[in-house]
Length: 249
Ligand SMILES: Nc1ncnc2c1ncn2[C@@H]1O[C@H](COP(=O)(O)OP(=O)(O)O)[C@@H](O)[C@H]1O
Ligand SMILES: [Mg+2]
Image 1 (cartoon, rainbow, N blue to C red):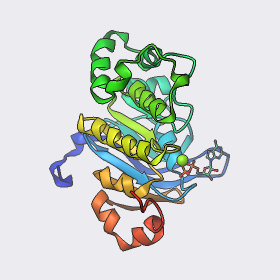
Image 2: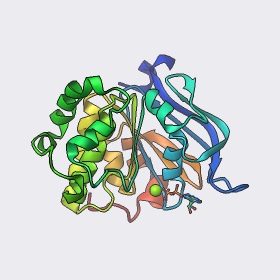
Image 3: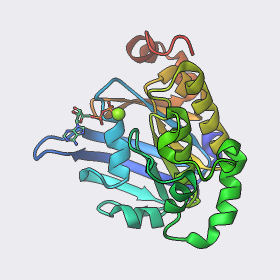
């Protein structure tokens, strides 16, 4: 689908001129803008410390939003706490500590559904269609899994609630190259199954290869926006952000 076939009803997440920060008087986001439309896979890349994680935290109510607006399905979500955000359809997979290691895979998945346990069987079926290997190992403790497998459990847990939008913070971080590749394929599969997804990645090249549109975040602002392909071929983006990153991908 091209951008001009969308109308405003298709907008799932919209961030407009968002300013946000952790410490008094210090903003990390300095006028960030982003739109994610229904069914899109959005990539966010940018240097370390640019505010990529902070941008996801701003959507998920984990950092103080001091200016601008964030809407999900047309309604403001600024100031809402996690449980309300989950009800509005926002699912967040943080970069680390994103599973309960002492719980089994099954219990982790159930935690993802605490607001609506009735749909467990139906959602497990959906999640198993993407992560088939988890379905056969439900009684295994998450703490005994490899990094790549934990990431799968974390994404599965987030998908259990049938979210309007899935926020992923560096799903490939800390994985071996083969596992990284697998992580990108899984994210792509999730999106192809219809889930609107916003993914932050330090593996910029690989991220732009699979996303519909991308944003380059620099010093808390969106410095460039475009289709994944356009950004990959944009000399300014290459020079500043892709030069040495992810060449192998
Ligand atoms: N909990 C926090 N308290 C104070 N400053 C933070 C916190 N988390 C991140 N920061 C600061 O915000 C800036 C952006 O961090 P982050 O959003 O994690 O960047 P990125 O994900 O792009 O690497 C950094 O300068 C970082 O030190
Ligand atoms: Mg980060």
